[in-house]
Length: 132
Image (tube, rainbow, N blue to C red; front, side):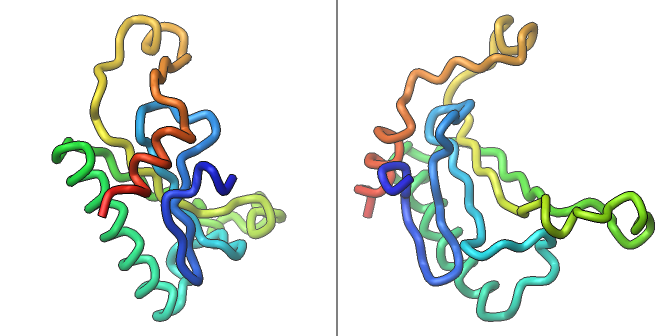
């Protein structure tokens, strides 16, 4: 995974996924298991804000300011249905996806759910890592 790592700090890692659907897609995730975004500490909030700012700057500067999608995946409401989510705390790991909008989806993506990404994840990570 080190060759797909864009950046890391004490609590978070920014990684280009192994099977990225889109060029320069980045996943930001906590290094320690955590299922619920709302439970992170103040120290973790500070580390998240630092790495998020840096990653967004790399995308902005390196890719010339593209639009992007920002998606926070956190656990579903587990409190109202405790009996249905017995292992949720073990199974789910919250994360953020950042997807620069560089390509347009076409019929193959819409019809099949398969994505064509012309950029190797290792190349995308190396490019973004080099942006200062």
